[in-house]
Image (cartoon, rainbow, N blue to C red; front, side, top):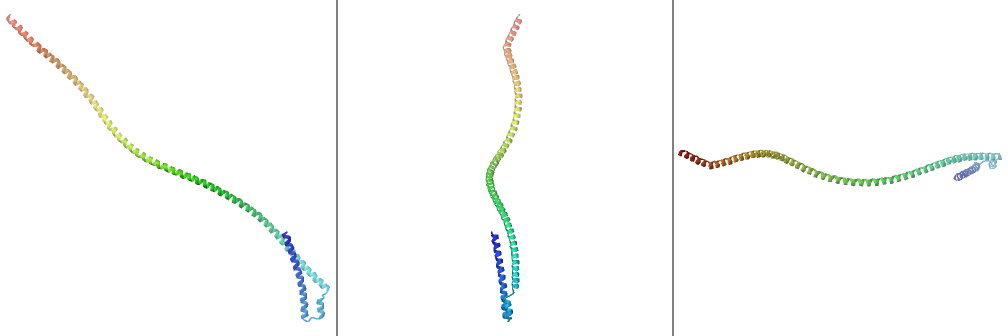
Amino acid sequence: NDNNDNNNDNIANQSTTSNNTNTTTTNNNNTNTTSAERNGAQPQNLFDALNPPSDQILQETRQALEASSEKLRVAHDEIRNLQEQLGQAITAAGTLQAELTTVKAKAAEAASEAEARQKRFETENRILRNQLGSRLTELQTARSRISEAEAERSKGARDAEELRNKIQWLTKINLQLESAAEQVQSTKAECVEWREKYLKERLARRQVHDTLQQLRGNIRVLVRVRPLLFANSNSNSSSSSSS
């Protein structure tokens, strides 16, 4: 409809242009007539100028119509070109509109994807922050445990050092005990030896004692018996002498 209105406006403008051309031609004729009068033309020429022959009028009219037709043809060509350009412009506008629609759709899709991506990133970021918080808590706990383990290790090292010192002391005591045990064994051996010697000496002394006791007994007996024997011997001697 806009194209038809534009075409009608162009045709109307061309008709107006043709009418203006005819009016201009008439005015030119009138101007020429007036100039002839000013220049002192003859009355016959003036009459001829005011009443031109019919052939001349037809010729001028034909020329004017041909000029108008040429202008109208040119105008139609221009209109046709303009219509073609308008069609091309409309087609291009449609193409651009389709491309714009496609671009808008792609932009909307990209915006939707970007929004989804942003939400996904925010979710992942929140999850990562939570995980980071958990990891930091675990790290703090691990550090506390490491500190406790370090303290226990230090205490264990001190205990180990004390135990090592105790072991060295006990080793020294053990060596001393072993030496003392050896001395005890040696002393025991000496005791056994001295005991055996003592027993032997005791036995020997007992034997000597017994021998002494026996000798003492014998001496007592001898002391007791010998005077009697001496008396008897003297008695016997006296008896023999008497006889």
